[in-house]
Image (cartoon, rainbow, N blue to C red; front, top):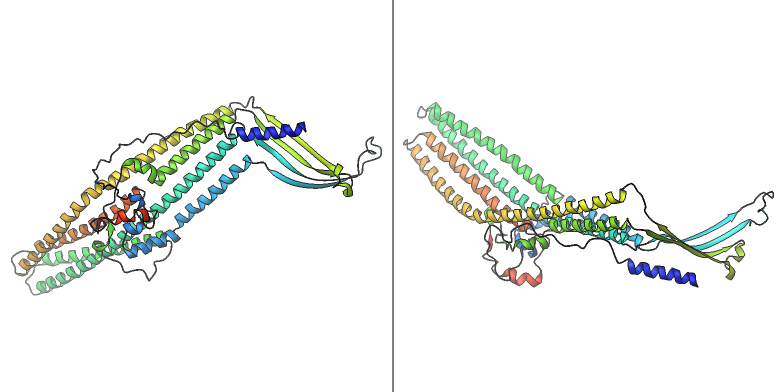
Length: 487
């Protein structure tokens, strides 16, 4: 009875002390960034955070929505990230298992025959049977070593889950940018084709005039140069378009379906341009990469507790209870009960400095994770700030470029009229035509930049996890939605 009380007391003591660890108290480092973005942002009171906006509410183009849905289902990077979460979750269960006793059942039968010359042969049983349950080397976690290791594994799991969420956000943003790029490449290809047709017609007219003696060879060769340049540009944008389609196929993880909605021109693609930026401190709760870095920091903090606990004694218990008998028939009789209890104490005395070195490694690793966490915050702050700076200027650039294209179109018309009338030389028409083409190219690039900026800012603010805006914020999101969308 006394022995049983000792066992029960040891178990209760282990359960009571097992909740304690030697890990230092965790405190979140201060964010090493300004409290405000360098670009002034106008936030409406009660406005929905960009991270809460569903990607279907930010990217309203039906073709793009279909592409994003396909990518979230088939993208291999996202699939690998999900499998990594499952693997780390299993590793956490493995790390947590030593907190509980390992109980096993055993059964054995022994048959032996000893030489009669041995003094003990007449007392040794020829047959012996036993069955029982046992606890094998269960460590009593007095100093929290196992719990610290379990906490480290748990925080690693949380970090991996956040990394998976980060891949999800990246896929949404990357598919949007790839779609915009494919549309821009398609429009550049169309423009190159139209330009090629125009200069080929101009070259044919110039060649006829040369044959008739009304145009000189310089004009003819200049027109020929324009044709070859246009052919080069057309071939270049054929390649760019093919590359853009390949990038989109890679992201969605399968060939483009034939039943996708018809694509819209860049100028008609509907996106929510005015995303609420919030304040930099919001990023600490919104950005998966920052949250993952913090969980890695917390895991490093827990590893210090395990390294500290290694300096203290460890106590493990091994026990077994069951039935034993020299005859199979008497195995389950009342007198066949047997038990054993083996406590073991391990006290580290000298290990060549290994324990101190392990603690140093854990403490330095924590400092590394602190720096990594702060770097993640700074990188996030920069991404948002850069996207806001671009958003601030993109509308002005787009307005100016549209006006330039209109002016270049009128200039080309006038140059063409004056050349046909014999007032100006062909080089004047050539310059106007080249400048118009360059202006139209830049307009397409600027339209792409605006759409890509929305995708970049949406991701930088932690958006892309929700498919639709949550119902509790949907009412706020609908307010002003008509004025905040632009293409």
